[in-house]
Structures are given as structure tokens and as C-alpha cells.
Image (cartoon, rainbow, N blue to C red; front, side, top):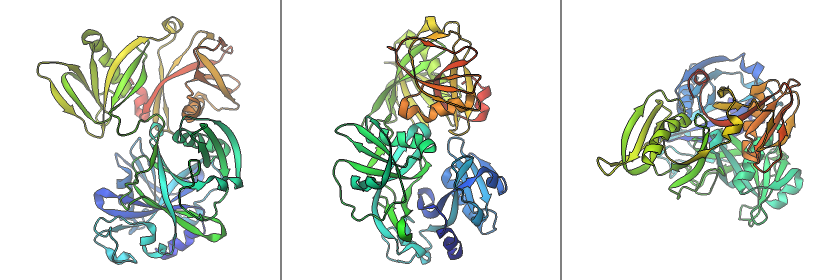
Length: 495
């Protein structure tokens, strides 16, 4: 183990300690970029319906047989790749045609304290450890605590580091723009990182100014006290949504490394910035809007977060419903008849339950973590005259985000309500154009595309006040009605 660790110390990597709560153990992982051509050469097994934690555990068990030392994981698909990869040929300098994989160096259970340098650790019986509490990393310098930025739309968590704004002097400014929150600013940086290398932000809450930065290798932090209202945030590590991280090793200048830690060994870090579209946990519900495209309507939806709904009765259960949006479609006739309808939707077993208000046989319903609970509220017609002659919507699977996106293509060549925000050249196909729009959803609220025979991809946001847009001849204009987590198989189902 020590030999392997010394080999990888020379590589540009991000080492971190992940806590597997159900198994009460901490695993040391290293995130590395590999080229797609290298990945094809590795011995590989594919497992379905596995959590990220299960994927780690299985690989760790196979490590003794030299059958696995790394994993690649798609959270939305619950798809686990077990890899037997040569250590010295994994890193790549290019961001194109590359993948992030996780090397697994070992896991420590609470029942095996002899792996630890310090025997009196307060987390000994929970199996939760920081990196500096594990053998070879005891000399790591503390770098303070990290902040978890959770991007619900992409099912990702970003580990970020707080720095005083004076540290941004060594950074290259990419652009300045206005954003509603720190979380929105971070999301914008992540969405554009593949294009301009953004890896840090400075956000001023008084002026709503968001500055995107490209920061070189950081110097070790000098102090970790609060530096005022405006801070620089360094974006270090991107992980699946539900991974529990105890600490992260950050490589700095002069061959020095420091450790960022969660607030506690079980990662109950209290200071979190959430996706700007997600309300604070203290809120019981969040209002949103959805396209019920089969009715050509936009409806207000109340997403209930406390997983409890009272005074309802179940009126129908529909099976093999592949999306939350489709489930809400079934709710629409009941709303018209009873002026109320709610749903409980399970993506795990594709089950849609419809609920209505009732004074008789009513009850309180609770849902588990895998189910979605929502009320369908007011609906109104959505540009029906402009859309009446459009063909039926089409479904596209985006492998990069693990989503199914439903698009409506327009026959009309003069359209209102769309404002062009960016035109990309040499875009290979329409699916790549859709993916580009999804990457810019958080920053631009990209909702439509125009793809031409010249491989131009124009992205649009909604703007009902804007003048008429003329669609280029022999091109495809499509509105992205909605996207939800899905698999390639969902392309052939009614989504």
C-alpha cells in the first residue's frame, strides 16, 4: 500500500477520505483523469443497480485478488465500472475525451484500529476518520474546513475551499456578471469549466457581482479565520451527490499538501451552499413550474420536502411510468375534476400514485427518500397557437449527464419568446447541441436550441418581450421541455 501511495504522490491527483456510513468504514480514494483510449485497455467489469458506496466496497474486496483497484461510476444509472488499471498510465493533461476515475487505496473499519497511527481517536467506534488520522498522512497540515456545494440538477456535489479575496490576485479573471447567490456563481463556474478552465469564484452578496477565475496551483493557506463577507472559493473536487467526504488532500506549491476537513468525522458539515434552485431545508415546500406538453400547458407544482402529506386518499396507481413529468400528466384530469391532485412518484420502480383531497377515508401519507411528493396546482395554456402544428416531442438520452431530455421541434420559422445567448461552431450533431444547452442551464437558463446544416448550434433562453426570431432555412429549432434522470432504455418508452 505504501509503495502505491508513493507512486501516486508524484501524480496530479485529488486524494480524499470517503465515509461509508452503512458499513462504518472510511475508504481512501484518489480521483484521476484518464483518456478514453487508456480506459478501453483496462480490464473491466460492469455492475448495475449499485450505489457508489457499494461500488467502492466491491472493488476493495477484489483488490486482494488484483482484479480491481479503481472504479468509474454513473450515479443516475447506478452503473459501476470495476477497473484493473495500471497506476503509471492513468493521468492525462487534456480535458477532452477523458474520464474521471477513482483509485481505491484501502478501507478502514472501526474493528481494525491497528491501521491507525493514533489509537485514541474519538471516532474509533464509528469507523469515520480524517486523512491525517490514517497511517501515512499523519503529517498533513490542516487547511480548515470545506464547503459542500450541491448541484441537484446534475446530481453532483462540489468540494470548495474558502480563501481571502486577496488570494485572487494570482488568478486570471475570466468574466464578471450578476448572480442571485454564491451557489449560482459556483454553478456557473462549474458549467463553464470545460470551456475556459474556471476553477474559482469571488462573489459579493451586496452587489450580486460574480467573478469567474482561473486559479493556478494554490499556495498553502496562511490563516483560516473568517475573512469578511466576500470570499474566494476554490473548486477542488466533483463527486456524486450522496458521497460523504471526511477530508481532502490539496496539493499546493513547493511540494506541500494540506488537508481540508468536514466539520465532523461523519461529514455533518453545517455550512453548505445548495443549488440555487433548491430552497433551504427549513422550508416545507418549493413552488416550481413544469411543462405538461401533452396538454400544451404550463403548471405550477408544489414540491413537498418534508415527505409528508395529510388529508388525502389514493385514487389510482399507474405502473411503468418512466418520469415524474409523465406522472404529473396523469394528475391533470383529476385536478380539473376535483380542483386538487398530488402525486407520489418512485423512479426506482416506475410507480405513480395519484392522491386527491377527501374528508372520507383520508389519511396522512409518508414517502421515503427514493420517492418524490408533489402537488399539481394552477395550469394555463402555453403558446398553443404557435405550437399547434408542431410534431410530437422527441426524447434524447444524454450519456454525459445521465438524463432523458424531451424536445419539441417547431415547424414555424418566425418565433416569439426566445432570445439567442450564444452560437457554437463545429458542433458534431444535435445531441451535442442539446448537451451544450444543458451545461449552460444553470448559468443562462438555456431552454432551446437551433441546429443548422453548417453544424452551428445556437442556444436560447426564454424572453417573452423579445422581438421575433427568424429560424434559418433547413435548420432545426427545438425547445427543451424538460429533462429528468433516465437511461438509454428510456428513449423507447413514453417519457
